[in-house]
Image (cartoon, rainbow, N blue to C red):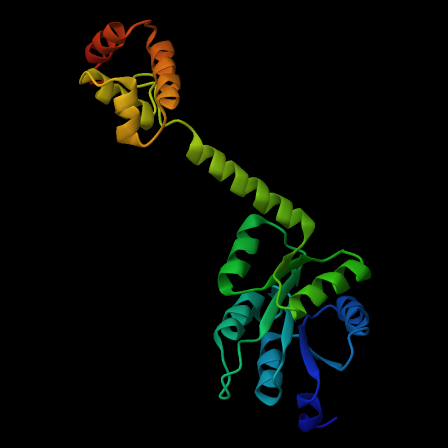
Length: 227
């Protein structure tokens, strides 16, 4: 097959040194029409092939005999050819599923991160999504990333309070306005919220400071250095 023949097809570069995984990947890609598979067992061989052929997709292992596959991911994710075509889409396919490797791969520009061991059908499904321009990750990784995102959001939403200062920053603002003699409705107008919202926040302040009145909350807040 000539270089001109390859240009008329979708070229997928598989950078992998395990013969079993190579055969599996060929099987995965066999159902995609007009797709030609190039195989490189090392980074050196991959770069050599890429000097001769323009690939559309690269499926790259991380642990290669002559280096880290992420170096190639970074190169390909930033490299536009002389005709201004977009960078080659890269998918990492590896046995490593730790968060550090996943984040490194995504930061390097990978459009996907797949963990070896998934079924042929699932790999085909995910690669089809990549070829449509969609990012993909294995479900185990997606669940971890989602859990981390939810956890981070939850931590950021936690009240910024301490034993010495149990009030949130919002409650401190409400307390400061109340201490000037403003009514609940006036505080609401200043903060752009309803009077009922301010009442709820004020009740929370009362509860945290162990008081039952406006005079009491101001006295305790001043004694504790909160005003």
